[in-house]
Length: 504
Image (cartoon, rainbow, N blue to C red):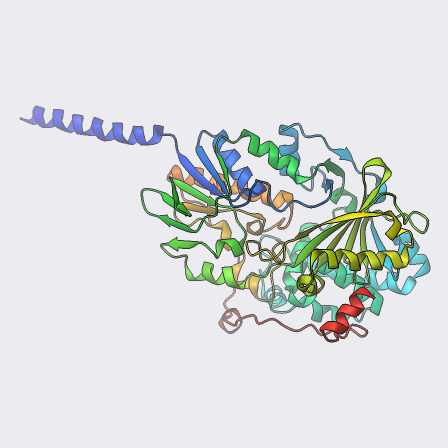
């Protein structure tokens, strides 16, 4: 009888072993929602590892928030290692950047100044900009670990304040303050809506890196070229599919899009927070994640490309590279066009972008053309047309890129790096070091793919190690928008007066 029991036990054990073995041998499946670079990278990494992947994209084509420029400046392999690895893998050739685009220029009341020109001809403004850069560098140097910026109470306090109030204390000359405001809003959002700690943390990430390394090469065709290379290798890409609900249990994940449903073992959500907030979850998202969906600030940014048959500004100054204006033109980027023409890419950001939401595309283009024509009288005769991309008014985006507001790092820092059961999150907003960049998007997609592999293997996904200070009075306070305290010469008039000032 004992021998019979042993035989039965052995058979049962063999049967259980076979079931486990079959489960491990079964091809794992995943759904990736979002066809930007983050989603494409996650899907590509998983498929390359043997997973069956279905990518769902709400728009008509994959690619995400690509810029209007005909090419994209990318950083060196030291600054953007993963991006350069992908470009090498897909044999996408870049062009070395000329020295002239590696620096920063300024357009002050219609006159162009390089850094050396500014120091010679406008020493007070140059001194003010240097003072700002020195003060910001000191703040950045105080952050030991950019992955854990609020590691002590003094740094934690920086998150409760905004960049505008800190700038007020520097007492910069009016024009220098206008240029600094434009630099900050072009990369993030209005200084009054930006956490001072976030500004310092991002400066810490790039501290000690020469500005030329940030624009060391040009990728002809821009990020869509890389997006197309990734999408081309994916077996299943469905566009025009807007996800409305996600449910998960111990067996897997189900995604609903219209009347259709998609099921898989795991899910990557690679969509901006505003789009994520439009999806119903079962079970519901935890309270902290729900708060982050409503309470995380995105920078407002729109792009306008003005096309000219000839570079009409050559007579006065060679406009090229990254240019900041002290008037309502935003950040400008001048690039060559076909057949000797030239394009001016204008990044309208912060309150300027918010203000222009009330105007049609053609009105915006006409007004910016009027501004250029005032300084460069041949502009209107050489004008060919425009293209515009409005990130700010897109309900699925809610803005351009992540820009933590006051108090938001303390509450939501690295929150979306943590999977929820079978769901991992990706997107530039989930990368703590390089948000708003191609590198950050790709890093987040690769990280999400690695997390799904760990989950399938039954291994715990490491939780980011960050300092959480015990300050209930501050941490529980809601960070209400703080009105900027303008520097002298920047008092904000009413709507129509501001509009006239913007386009005068």
